[in-house]
Image 1 (cartoon, rainbow, N blue to C red):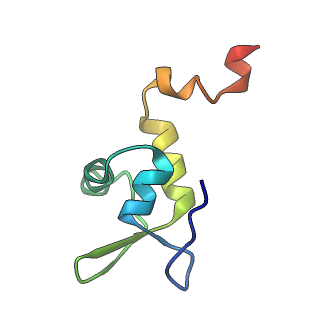
Image 2: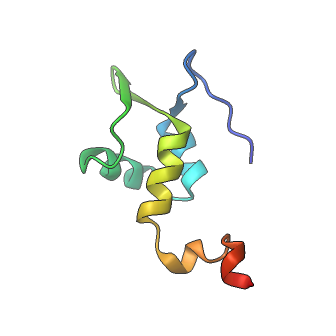
Length: 76
């Protein structure tokens, strides 16, 4: 999966953030509302997020069952 930042400072859209984290766009909105994603830039109704922050939030908030698919130490 290749997600290309669409803003000049490396931020991605809410739709791209949802794809990156493997969640719904509404989940990204909920993470913003709950303060899990803080480095948010708004342009009108558009929301721009830093990819690294989205990945960190997904790791903290995603169910552990889903996370174990990607954790190589769990398979060892």
